[in-house]
Length: 276
Image (cartoon, rainbow, N blue to C red):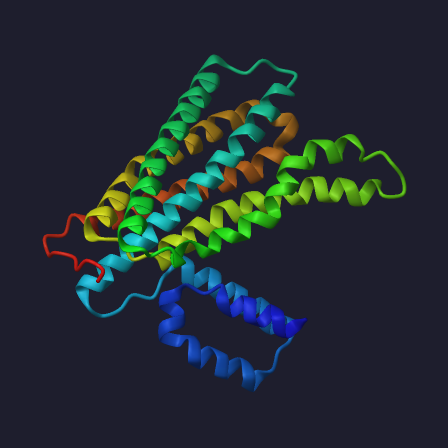
């Protein structure tokens, strides 16, 4: 079981990291042995490698990797902000005090901005699909297969919650109803980011994705601003709103910084090399 967890942890690293350090990392694991602490260290290292990707020395390839990392980070940030909006609406609806009009307007602006950003992301997906159709590069989409086992739990979650009171399986049914959709949402956020890092689109498509990420980042930031404003009206549910605030602020900061770097790389005068 530990060996399987180690292999999965090694696979969790970005492709650029595995290409450069994969062999050394596997050798190090063989020397130290497979233990739960080693798996935890590998997963933490994989997260750090995604947040701070390894870039090659060549300027052209370095900018390509930067744009790919920027698009992946922006997508994950958008998903994080999108998932917190319904929770925030629910928390405010349960508040005994009326929600100020300013907060409601900010939430409406954030919601419409996130939907608009979703349309921008959809255009990017269609551009990647067109690129795959032209080049026949469908292997990069394989990580999306991970969505298949978690999707049924999202569909049947309301039905499971309806029967959660049946003993003695009530706790297990409720756990599947809660953690199943959670696993689907996490998978839906992570697997497209993996696809982006595995894909090697043309320079034109890559620039489109990187530049459109700026608009997505501003939509995520709008959600963060609305969440900060809502904190003053959710005193009775701060145990819920504080994690939401942390997630949205972190997502906003990550999206703004990463999209800015990606746009800077996209606007560089030196021409990118298209995939062969």
